[in-house]
Amino acid sequence: MSVTIDIAGLPRERIVFEISPLAELGVALHALATPGHHPGLHGWATATAAGLKPHLADRLHEADFLWTTTFSDVFMPYTGIRGGDGRSGATLAEELDMLDRLDDERFVAATLEFTCSRTYASGGAIDRDRALELAATRGPKQLDFARRILDDPAAVRAWLRRLFEDCDHAFFADTWQRVSQRLAADARHKTELLRRKSLADALHAVSPALTLDEENGRIAADKLAEGHTTAVDPAVGAGLSFIPSHFGWPHLMVLHAPGWRPVVHYPVDAPDLPGAASVQLLKLRMDALAHPMRMRLCRNLARAPYSTGELADAHGITAPEVSRHLAVLKKAGLITTRRRGRYVLHQLDVASVARLGSDFLETVLR
Image 1 (spheres, rainbow, N blue to C red):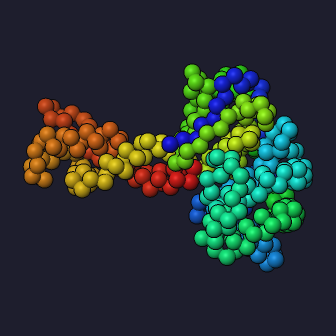
Image 2 (cartoon, rainbow, N blue to C red):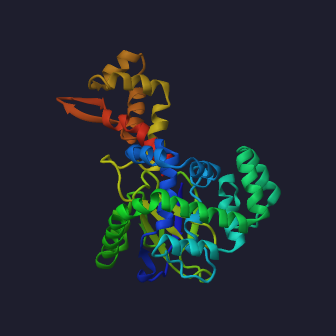
Image 3 (spheres, rainbow, N blue to C red):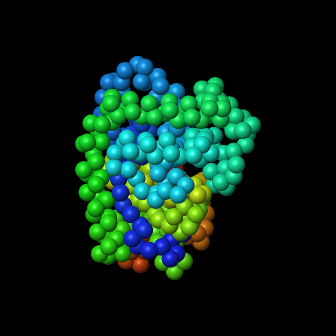
């Protein structure tokens, strides 16, 4: 599974690394609302939440599904303005002006993403009854907000702008001043990699989850999601944007709505941990451990190295059966082997198994 971006024929100068205050505000609100996703930000989230005035906190709770259930595309309005250049703004105020320029159809579709509707991928027209039905399953708060969006998008647009401006006054202006220089430096560094080396080098520096298929002109983001977009659609202007985020880890987000300029929103600051496993490797490992006999073998292999014959004797099965199970575990990277004389000994790779929980969490949140 992956989200892919077609870039065949895209000039390199149309691939840009730039910062976006509104996009960073969206991820900051997400980190504030879901601190469990961002263990490295507990201190910031606790202090910021404690400093919010009750009225602002209530309003944030009213719209929090825009940055908790999903990361709404309203935080990158510049990529969806018809006839625009798809580039981010220099200030939050400038990007909020771009939000005002986003047409009602796209604004409504972006704010209704929390309903998990298939219209995001298809780009189809909004089905009002279906949108309200999906919103109702998420509770009365979401249903009421969905009705307001569908009935009076201009009023909701103005309400959201005031909310974002109040967040800026309350905490984000200081936060942005602190992190923006770091993000701008990262964008410059990635731009230099792109210009002086290659797109593949720049992508690897962004995230190991991004790969380049040069033959077919395609970038793939290894995610537990499926999607496809193009950076060479003449209707919206050819281009691809990469936007760094201080608050983003472990999320690697790809804006791939039809008719919008594609964006890769990637984390810059991350804990000092090994990179998460690919989706394919994670599936291999979980499938390997799902078999009862392989779990029993792992109990032995976690304690000491064993030969195939020893494991066969211990579990009352044949050596070929043990070999088949060990082959599955080895393919999944869960055991190591070494030779002692004429015996081959197998042992559980405890570090890889210990990473499974965090690998799974990082993969589903990526």
